[in-house]
Image 1 (tube, rainbow, N blue to C red):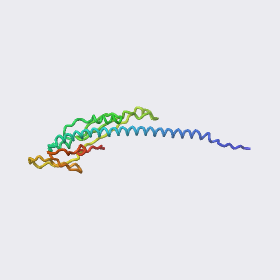
Image 2: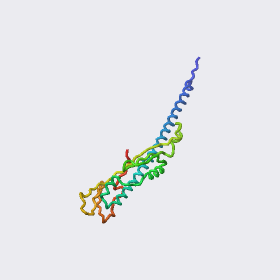
Image 3: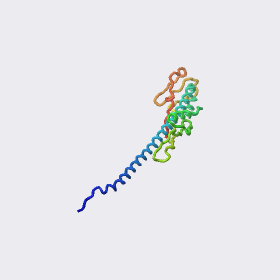
Image 4: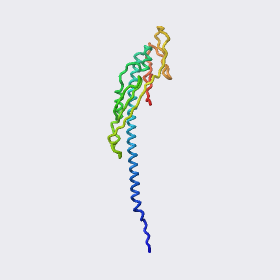
Length: 198
């Protein structure tokens, strides 16, 4: 008489089960490592964007100050709007904003007359993971911010001896300026737009 034995294959399935579970755990840790790297990369890009914008905004404020200093001299306006005036280096603002975002500036410099490009590196690393060496890897990123004039004006065809100032048209607003009443003047954001560039 034969006796049937049940569960004879269960011993063979157990190693396969362990292998599958180990593989799934490895994949989970690998995805975690990729997520850590992506998060660190995003932190670097945020710091770079903030740093570039900060430097450009500081330069924008300097240009607006130059325009205010020369508001009674319309012949000087175009050079200011073109960025063709002497302004101080604004990279110090990039360093400040990068530090506020747990990063440091590796390179900073003007782009043309009206822009800044900044490269940053995170202070923190990707962290420990199943991928060897990630505990020492820092993320880097770069960003460029551009300043664009928002205003146009027309100088008189010839000097008539009149002290009247030209109308300053800044996109959706016109500024009728009078040399005798300069209390209502455009703000820096009215004169210039600052944005990130690709």
